Length: 479
Image 1 (cartoon, rainbow, N blue to C red):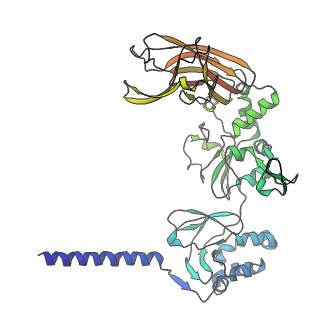
Image 2 (cartoon, one colour):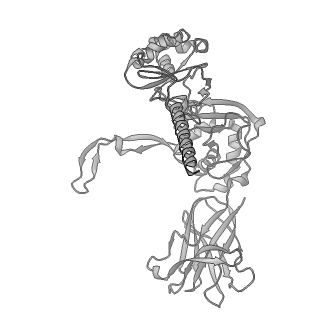
Image 3 (cartoon, rainbow, N blue to C red):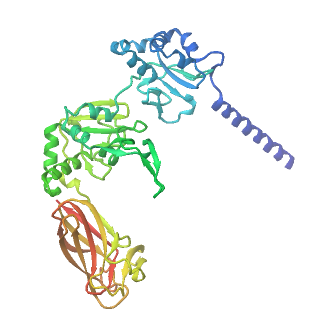
């Protein structure tokens, strides 16, 4: 009996090994292989690709497909390539870019693609490649492996397209929104591109040649999404000029600054920053409702107002007849965690500052807080810096539980606007004893209005030399 069991186990093991080997063979085996030909030869021998072959020659790219460098080619059939723009055929530079947009470095086989991938083409553009499509073209014959690469045929074309950033730059006269985004260009220094004249004998650092290493950047690309980047795909919404002005004007009260020029720039920025998304939505029915911007703003898009959808090399541009974002959606609650202050009134009191892990007996969950006692400094404070704070009213909530002494105590929350050097308000916080009902609930302290856009320090301040205790402060905007 034991002998039969051993034989059965050996047979099962052999079956598994054979199956695994077959699967590995399926994975690695190239269906069509001819290492006696290169890409140019195999394309030339296929009558269905004769027009593509002709255009390769016209563009002066024969040598590229004959070289030993490994490539992948997605070649349009004669039927597909009939749709090429005659202006492209007549312009050698455009034709060259067109052909190169069908060729990439490295080998890309169908068997290696499980999901759609972005592939860098010799044109400098990226195209999507999946098991059924290259860009928007369906695949024909695939995985023809030759001496210097692999050939796929496609039943369509992949003409090089503008990316979204190129579209923005090309339409600044047409759309005020894009003119504003373009106005955010600035020059920056890149030491990697600069010429080193010498090394400073004093600092030991390079001394760069004046005027070198200067590159153009854009604050929208830096802070929102880099719409020049073709490795990823995006969706970008464009408002009509009148709509853009109305949206920006609706925010003016909330971005009160020292000059109207600054206010105007801030309001426009706070419109455009929520109009780009790091996902490609090919149809109006493909994006969620509402969209949530990188900055957490809820943006409802009414598909009835979609005028046009433009396909770009790195995503889609939606031209809208109207796009309204409720003003209240623009301003989000802010939570300031007590245990992570920006700083203190003085930096020599660290021995009196304790960051604790505590248990909330009501919820059974742990929480962190800051506990400062014995510092001996009148109106000592820990502060929490908020930058780019709009000029808006905030409903202020705080949470702290007095679990270290039986005597009640009060601390004050001061809002100091550093941009104008002015106090925006003070709210007393009577910290509840842990023994009273609701001691672990947050407390509504009242409201504070920030009168000027900028940086505000929220200072949790001791009364005379008393203690400071804080789990968190929560600021809820009231537009």
